[in-house]
Image (cartoon, rainbow, N blue to C red; front, side, top):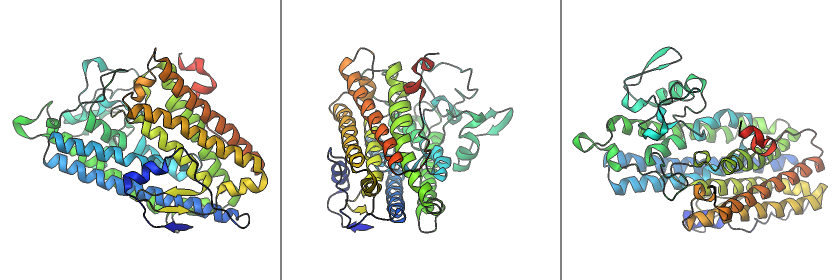
Length: 430
């Protein structure tokens, strides 16, 4: 593993790492061992989750300032901190799917979509109930008690334990999300009521004010919910950092069997590329032209989250991660193993990664120029729809090459997750 010193500010480093050019893998004198490749992958996981933890702590500090002194300025600063926390975390998503410890944990920090009526007030258009979710409009913030599975639960005092142990996936419903980035996002932005028109959520800072200045009621509990959710996010990320440290559970499990470890890298790359990103996060929303199916739906930050997912996939393959402070973690790479077995596949996969990142960058640039992701998937927006479809096509193409890499390395059966939106689109409309 090679560390290089910080070269730029955090902001510049993030943008630099997200350039359209692929990272150049180190030129090794000989093909590295599988053990060395796995060590690099684990080191990148540790660095990525550590950066996510640092940015979550900055988010916690910004939300504490909002709670202490609610104002347009402190709310804007908290939103900026939330946006800034996403690039590092999204680059960790490639560690899902192939690493069971990560998959078992991930829903605590990035579960979506969520039925926001569980947490707080919602607009009348949201509706008053759902056949699939008895807690669709429970509004914990305005309630002293709610009923979960026939059991009365006291919600007068909001704590991290209440959020995690009682409310998260309450009643066995995955859309009951009370923890993680998207619960915090909703608390900061509120609902996005603009459909596929311009505009994100617009929660007033006075929703966190005290006394007569409070808007929409229960401001003290709303602040407590926000405080508990950000504190819990830090706790959860600290746990995952520990899992990737020396002798950590995730690192240990990865290194137990070299072939299974290499398969885990490719499983994460392929499943994130195909079923998760191309399918559930992009094609589904495009088919339905539904802004509720975008990943960061309250903040209109979806373009950035998709983009950094793509960067994370490339990091895992090239064995190189540029940290938030500009430092670099790099070492023996999966690309080196593929190069030794099938140079043509390696070159094709590197080119495919560049191509998918370029297409995701086009979505990113359009959003930064004023056309948010929910507008790009809107019905009748032919140019925006085509831009998103091109990124989906590029992600599918790179998945096919990932499958060729799996075959070249003779890893046997490696399961890549699918999506009805890609594999059985008619089921989406049933």
